[in-house]
Amino acid sequence: MNVLVTRTERKLAQWRSAGSAPPGAARPRRSRLRPATSVAIVLLFLVAVLVIVVPFLPSYNPYAINLSVALEPPFRSTAHLLGTDELGRDLLSRVSLATRISLLIVTFALMLNVLIGVSVGLTAGYYRGKADTVIMGSADLVLSFPILILLVTIVAVLGPSAQTIAVVLGCVFWVSYARVSRATALSLRSREYVISAVTQGASGWWVIRKHLLPQVVPQIAIMTSFDLGVLITVEASLSYLGLGIQPPTPSLGGMISDGQNYLQTSPWLCVLPSLVLLLLIGGVQFMSQRFTSEGQQSRGMTAT
Image (cartoon, rainbow, N blue to C red; front, side):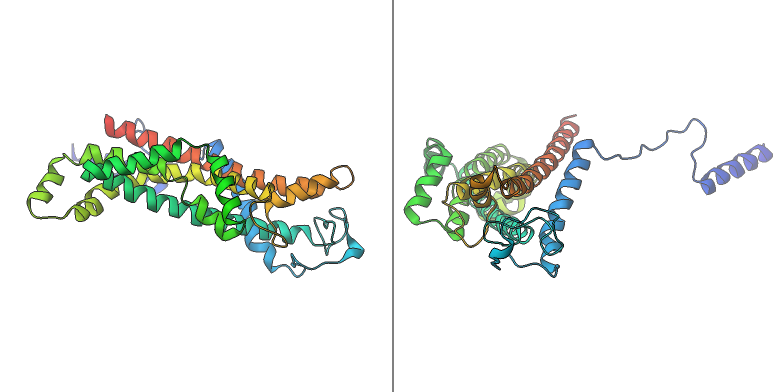
């Protein structure tokens, strides 16, 4: 008997040293990237190269005007790899700067939306009463207006600029975050650990910060990954209409609008910023699909 045990231990030691599992044992599954995730990584990597690497190139200058090389096609010279616009400005430099500015505006707007929506949503769901009525009534009022028309009206009144777009976008898309946060607060406010904290003298803001906010974060993360692409599209649309970033500062929407005048003779003026916009929105949307599927799986495991 001792001989058999010794042989078995030797075989197990050999399998462990070789890194293989014993016969009949369940082998761990290797985690593979999903196609959507792989596509998102590739697209976002290209955008990251455009935003981070291009400004360090020797020929980077998005504002330099040189009429002698105006409307130069792409790949004609190393000084202007993607060609030039009607004023001889380097397109690669301008597209890189436009993408960076768009990401800064959209990131600020998204953070502002999350801050407003989560704050008022948790407040309305936990305290109920008049606060709930006023906050959700305001949310219904915002939803009653078409978002794009509301944005165009506000920007037209305040005047187009990058600061105006960032603030306006940050004060319009908060409703969905407020509704999700409110629903979470309503479902958790009667839980035993919340009631126990209140009976021990915890304030409402402490309960919201310690018990309610951590439960909202995963859902908010999924929503932000989707809304990022929406905000990029809206910002580019406003710039396309002339209500966004003003010249000479480049913007993807503004470059597409200006390039339409040269579609027959110089189509790259319109195609290049459109392609960058497609890469950016596509990468964000594919990545949001990954977050959404993971969130659904985690909820399914919690339910079971």
